[in-house]
Image 1 (tube, rainbow, N blue to C red):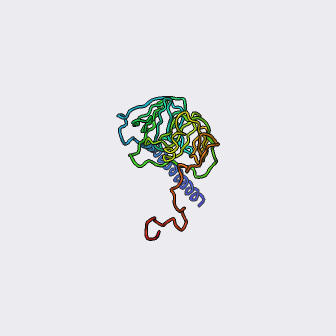
Image 2 (image 1 turned 90 degrees about the vertical axis):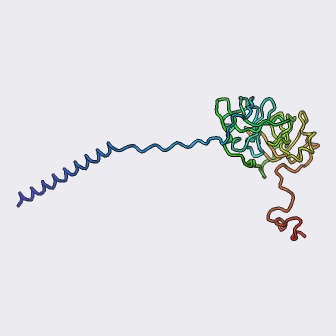
Length: 256
């Protein structure tokens, strides 16, 4: 009886050991024959929509970034006085490839009668190149602060500040500050914005490592002759949002 029981136990143990060896061999074979997972595909590079090669190339030394009053890079000023303007996406990447004092090359459309360039691609001194890869569309507006610290600007005008359409919208100062007044104010105050003129301005904006830029609400040859102006980002006249007259259309029956 004991002999039979011991024989059965030995037989069962042998079966279990054999099964373990077979399973281990199969696992090892499977592991040896398994293929490593394929690498994730590389991110697709965004290619320009248009061929930029035929565009004129303007080269020069970067003197300063042209900032918006919110501190965004709206363009570049070159040593020869050329103002280079670019869409917002391109402007955000400019500081990564070129700094003031370095040489840059710009592929873009040159202004007629004004020292301006509408940039579509910029190449920095280390060969890095950024391009406007989006199809042509309405340009995204640059942000403009509605609240913030007052920033004063005093000095001598270096050049009138143009916009991407070639219209004067303010002044660039010798100390690299940028003063925005808007197209209508610039026409009215042209004598104060001419190169060599003394200028005092104060408004909401930024002042930091990349430069100074403000939306002027007071401007004049000096602080004693300063006048109040509507800032370049002032909302159009009319009832303020949420008021009783905000939804009234002038000339409609409701407005009578």
